[in-house]
Length: 201
Image (cartoon, rainbow, N blue to C red; front, top):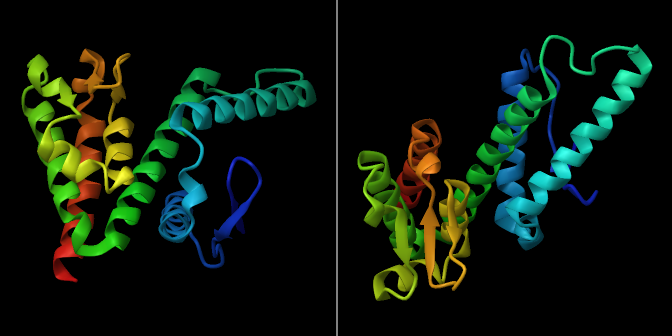
């Protein structure tokens, strides 16, 4: 099976022979995406907002076609928002894996960025009501020194809910994102694996 970007470019292949479950197929697809991210800068060329918008358009189009053929509900027992939420969640997880793979591929030079992102997420996770942990000042020397050379590290923060402020001087996280424990824990688990791989190497 060929793994393609949303613009149609072939990124790699996923071996489906012998797979016994959807979960196993998803794991193989994520591994292929992570491998592609490590070697192809264009994997990260589309912003997360653009990717989600495109995915939603594709889902709605597919749902319309399915509904037209069946003459009934497009998604069976599940509503379209439920299906979309699951797909976007899977897409975010795959994007986190890809960003972490990029940092892992950079080797020891990316370790400070991985450590910083993990500490920032840990602060939010442990103190979701503390506004100071939900704002990152990009001009801070330590922040700038870790994030600027490793764009994938900032991508990880954005995937966890941080977004650039209007003046471009900060990354801010909403209250809702700060309370999304599942997303923060997932990101930290992915970062931990990347850190361990870099430290071993």
